[in-house]
Image (cartoon, rainbow, N blue to C red; front, side, top):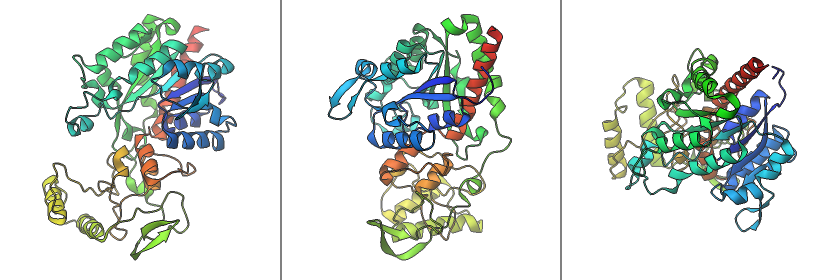
Length: 419
């Protein structure tokens, strides 16, 4: 495999979302996205648009399969005029037309495995169907037998136990049964994305699976260790990227002092000059703007009266009359990475308050995208609910590119050694 940047590695993306993982793989120039599977309509539309306009796939709408991965037989062989998903010839046809498949990437929705999700749910997410979506991922791996796979999820997957056994034990056993070797101690597969230039405190588990048939049992064990200790860490950045570096150059959005309409929606803040797509402030109430002013000025002045959890919970009760077990407010800091950009950012954004005391708002879709390292030429289509959610669910493309480069390096070295 030469170091020339041509699309030599055939890949499919499962649980693709709006394509953060895929975008990083595409940026390297080494991967040919044969198909991407995602069940939600909004992310699929954005994914198809991105594949077509940015990555030059003229048949992008055929490659993006909007479908329920749990219906695996239909996913493989095609489905017709389904009320929710239309029709498609399925994965088999796309993969046959492309030739051999080298790699499967993706990760099932993480909410069922996240510790925060288990705390919020009265049953600890034990009854959540998403606990077992990994089974569908494994079925696709078993069917197409790629050289390797990349399975991304939250670190909480290591402690999740919806049944009588830890879910990670079942996953490891299932991969082994399918003919794939994974790292034995997966705590070594937890990656801090701030080490890879992502301006946001985000840790994820990246499980690499290698085909025992292709690599050989002994090689698998050596390569897995090397992947995490040599190939991936080569792409670490020297310093952590800050919020200022990520969003500081975006146009400022100031309170108008009254409501206006913009494209049929009520707005409370100015429209950016010059215009930047997706950089429209959410409507903010006067009460919230007063709270934002208090909190941002508290940090700017150095008083720091409202930085403890207790003081923020107390403030929330004083201002709203409600109580909360967690503090609802958080101002992101200019000089450090942001807190996690989550899918539920679409609900209110109060834990992602812009640090400028003159702007008095939560972060925009574009700012969330920047903190997730999406390029500005990825213009997100859809409502705020859809766009914040899909961005929060994504793998940051900047990390995904590092991961893709490391995978390429490992495959290249192995194939050179075979010659």
